[in-house]
Picture 1 (tube, rainbow, N blue to C red):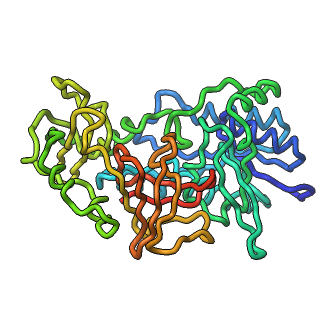
Picture 2: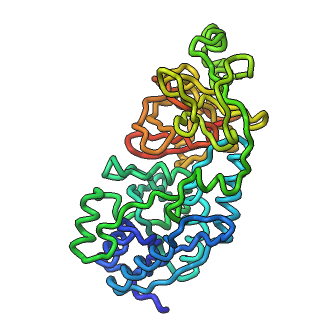
Picture 3: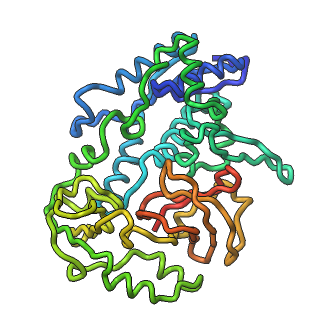
Length: 398
């Protein structure tokens, strides 16, 4: 179709956020095309007794009809299975805890989907993420600053922590300067079918399935031991006598080296790969004064180590390490000199309040050194750092 205006392809999920994003773009005079991504139809895994993607696709289509914009559905299930699902199962089998939403953005929405949009002649793609972009010029080069959304309770910049400058240069975030309440008000005023629709709680773009249910349909159950570690274990006494200087960061960022003889056998589990650090639910072990939390999983020997209470020393650490290969800089022009501490604010999971920390680049990666101890730093998750609301970089926790 011939272009007369700036063309924007919107990723319509069937939710209120992307619906309002599409409306705002039409209001600004862009030529808007709506596309729904179908990312899953593997009948070997039951997502839900319902067909949520059909419902979402229908809602996306109705929004497009209301806004008088072209609409189509694209099947990205092969790419999604290969890039997200296979990777996710592989990581869980290794004992890591990946974040499928971060991966979905990096691999699907801002890669596969972006390429489809460009083939349709798009100048930009747009999504319903709560974050903001600011374009600046530095030495005659355009640089895109990824900023937190105005609504602090809905800020989704964390999920975009792996995007590149090239991807950001082709992206619009129309609702980043709005609150969720304002978005719903706009949708209601415009009579959009998604105005009162609840936010999706399932895996990225595949439906209402809960992650544990999804994993248990693909990963085999395997009974193993649950070992309870005392908060006064010799492991922590030995750790506290170590040299905690900057020269010893690799040692103090490493997981505790638990063994069966370090605690007592208090129960059994159905597979260490179903659990993650900091998890409380699903252990089915009673008789303790305070709840038990997972301190560490050993998938090789199929053992889960647990501790009593949320302040157990096995849950708390101040330092994490990111390997060089897992380090991603949204702002490469901000690459910091090695062996110099740089003050940042950081988080190790979505919705965690930002924490004061220092970032230190070394030859083989980077350390995040927090001012206060963090609970359940988890291998495979993404650590993200900001300066004055700008997301500068991220990395997979080692």
